[in-house]
Amino acid sequence: MDFSEKILAWYAENKRELPWRNTRDPYKIWLSEIMLQQTRVAQGLPYYNKFVSEFPSVYDLADATEEKVLKLWQGLGYYSRARNMHGTAKTIVKDYNGDFPKTYKELLRLKGVGDYTASAIASISFDEPEPVVDGNVYRVLARYFGIDLAINSSEGIKHFKDLAREVMHVGDVRDYNQGIMEFGAIQCAPKKPYCLHCPLNESCVALKENRVHELPVKLKKTKIKNRYFNYLVVFDNQSNTLLEQRTGKGIWQNLYQFPLVESETILAKEKLKELATQHLAAKKITGIYLYNDKPIIHKLSHQHLHTNFWIVQFGEEIKDGLPWKEVINFPVPVLIADFIKTFKI
Picture (cartoon, rainbow, N blue to C red):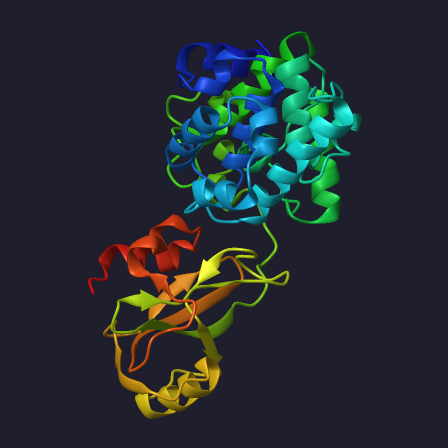
């Protein structure tokens, strides 16, 4: 058997039973692929089930409010995926009468759909012979063929796409594409690959040259930026609080948060109180204390957020205040969701 046939044989014996593998519905394939970008299957599966239950069709998703979509997405991260997904659902309903495009090139025109997602939908739903190349596929190909081109360089991206096309199984591209991704996730895993019982071990270059843990090669990440967030968790005597919606194109666009003071470094209480008074335009702050013992470091792909939650007591009623019990209804970053779960008034 050649490379692709061994992948198919392995997949037939070892594939996990996942709901999107029992359908050719492009809507459900699309949902699963968008959700599993940057996300492990174990984490993404409950979200997939929630979305399919809440939005059984692309029409249901298109009709939903963005706030509802973001709330269901809460905790998955990379929220632009959810916003793009919602916008694309509207496009498919409006411009395509609810029917997904059936070719790779047409799928690429949809917002939030790149090479990988278009390839996955086209091959899995419509049997178009288009190879998928995700992190798992990069790893399998780099190790098996001993390729040390950086997978995140323009030269590497083109080389691996061409190689993936060359070795794919055209006769059963649906199972082959799912199989090579599954193989990379389970058999040729990042840190503990099962090389001893691998069906490809006799011809794997990385195994032969003892380079399994060196491949694939990736260019160094951009420098991590440190930011310092001070959330003002405000209360009046009626246990009302304040939430604000994030705007702009930065992180967590359109999610909600407590009023935020961003600083150049960690703030002492007196300085924070001064800034809180200005930020909230408050005359009567009667008390303020730091909730967490030390800053909570929330790590994103290119930035680390050093976060403090300050409990701020008002001596006057908050105008347009929100009852604390209603806070859980709003879509918020997981950093704030974790605080809400633990905080007791």
